[in-house]
Image (cartoon, rainbow, N blue to C red; front, side, top):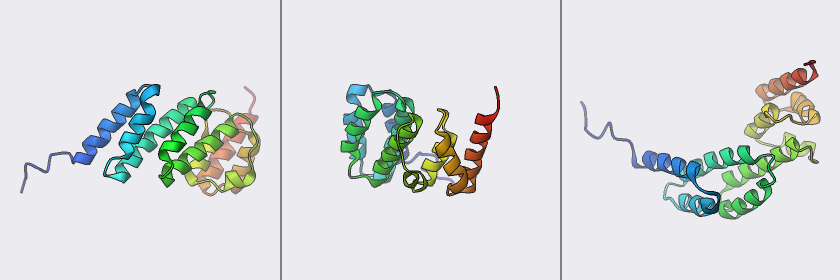
Length: 159
């Protein structure tokens, strides 16, 4: 039993792929308009996923760049009604705070999502030893606790 339609990719998959390509290639000056356009898609789950991937990529690229703050503030306005995206951007901002050695609280770190704690424990940019110790002791998952412990051990080894 075969159907000519079984091999066709669903329309939302094609749109998702187009959105990812467009978001990857978008100029900074057009980014907000494109993100807003993607978020107007009728399939909100797919749109949030595409924008979430874009947000993760851009935030990682800008993490220690001075442009991060203005970028995050601008995107906050565009994603304000999307809870997942708002939380993700807030957690990227906290990751930036930790990476730059700025003040953070234990509650912020231990109250973050599993994704956030995993990122904080495995960041390529040397995270705060205090953050690593806290995650090694009180991280939500064994994976986070182990990753933080390994980072601490690696830091303590002479080069």
